Image (cartoon, rainbow, N blue to C red; front, top):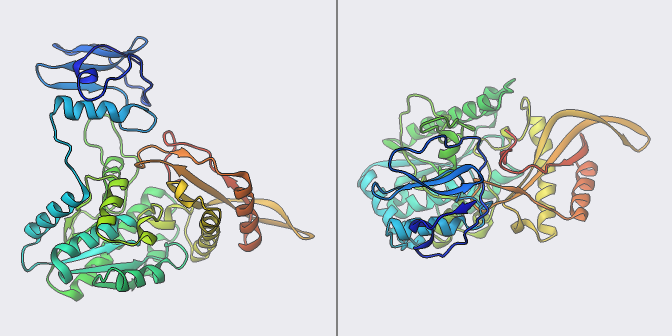
Length: 407
């Protein structure tokens, strides 16, 4: 991309080169400039940036917010500080202080709150933040939906109670979730069924508590972007259980303190709140859990098989000292079987796909270049330790065009 000498590009905090590499993944293009606008950047004959300084409108066709645009952060900083004249004084501590005050104002001095915990970073940070604001007037509900990682329910519940001192109740609703997911194959229907069942469970538990008016969720900004089409020709990529699977009528009003944040910001806030690394540095985990990592219908037997394969993958990432080198890593159970050999016998068993990506915010991601000896060790362990799997493959797709999760 070639840029003109537009002040929002060059006259603010960062002097940028005349030519920039940018990421422009869509087929949309400018055919005619609106009245009063002028072009400030092009890629060949393609218009990539326009502006109307008199009206204070500055437009880009590319994505400055993604890692694929190397100087994108500098472009955004120039706009924020050079055009908008913002101060840039946001800190995790300041966010925590302001959000606590906001939560207290919204909830009031007497209302009770229920929080849905998933075991992951987002819901945990949201729960601790609300706990700082209103204490034990928040009751956390940690649901075992039967779709969590290996032993995650038992181990995480102990951390919630003994380390973070949250007012938390553990609820085993595995059979209820398996029941609503029986014979469901479509990924969107899975997500909506899981989301609706979460709300059902919360409503039941809330009635036991009494006088609960609010539901806390760890929704992040990428969840909102991918789940809601705001305007124009954008489409919903997928529903998340906390933004796209809610029933039309809810008995509880929502509190989403992290809704405008990205994952890296949430981790910074969690660190300031004293959340232990065993939760804070845990890879992202989807709200629907293993339900969207089992392609096809879901059964307890498939869940157990995937839990074992996924545990091997994560254990070996730690053993090789590369767990923190990737943004997210997990196993996917594919709906195919293939021929294999075990001893002197022919097998016809399942295939597991391994997925590992690098990213900064989850909006874009690249497949992780994991060492071959590591992949060999993982494959060997899965095929020898997980009965029912005889083939392991590795996903080398980036986002876009793929999403991080398979469903």
